[in-house]
Length: 320
Image 1 (cartoon, rainbow, N blue to C red):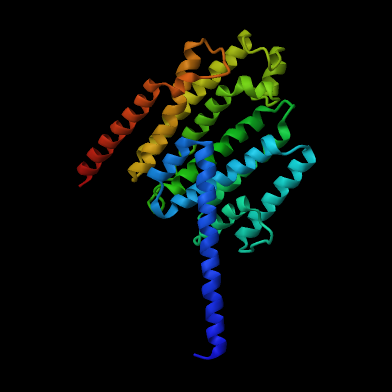
Image 2: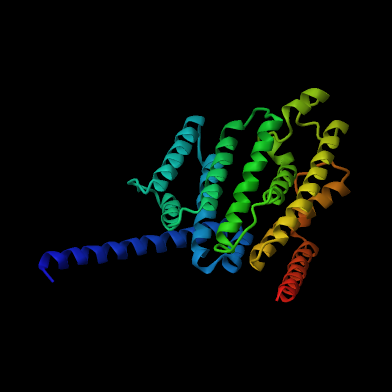
């Protein structure tokens, strides 16, 4: 081998080692952020994600968690939020063009490593990233203003698409997934419940999750949560979420991968527990729903996991 070839080979080996070291560092950072933010998400990725996608699952969650936290707490002005969101969107666009910008902060390296390892350019990963970036951007600029029903429907739809496509990408990737119209409904329902759960605190912080048209039609303010019209609207949302959960679970039932099915059902049950509490309270919302942390709730979640596993294995045996 010529000297020039040997030097080039050494450079390539060194570059590969540096890239591997960077990927290890982003995996460690992503695990740390996920652990600090959500133990449930940490263990979901640890136990349920495809083993070759486990670190990428942490990277995806941690990056979006970092972006959301910056918008919610770290940014000091509207201009700073605009500049930050613009930089992140431009970064993602560049990465999908196979361009790696210079001077990335460690958190941005997480999304760079995630996208660079998606060699097949899976549309579900792109949907997961883009839909969550869209809702983070929406939240960044809606504070303090009333929003329309159309905006709120779009908001929940984006979350539904992002959650479902993320689940199907990181868990059970490589297996067939049906593309039925009901595939996003369970996660959309979960977001409807998520907004109800956080309504009291969000309203205090300037994020209004009830449509402007409804408030104006009934002559109430966002703070009048105990009023009959407000409670009637909450009841409508609860009934809509119930319907979406029922239809969305039909999609999860069709999945071939047990891990995907279990996580999908667990996601539903977590929020159905809150629906039960809202109904018991007569559709009067409160600031905290401790039911989701009770032992009975965890037993319910694990029972569903066991039940789904038995049904799944029974169906597989019958198919043979």
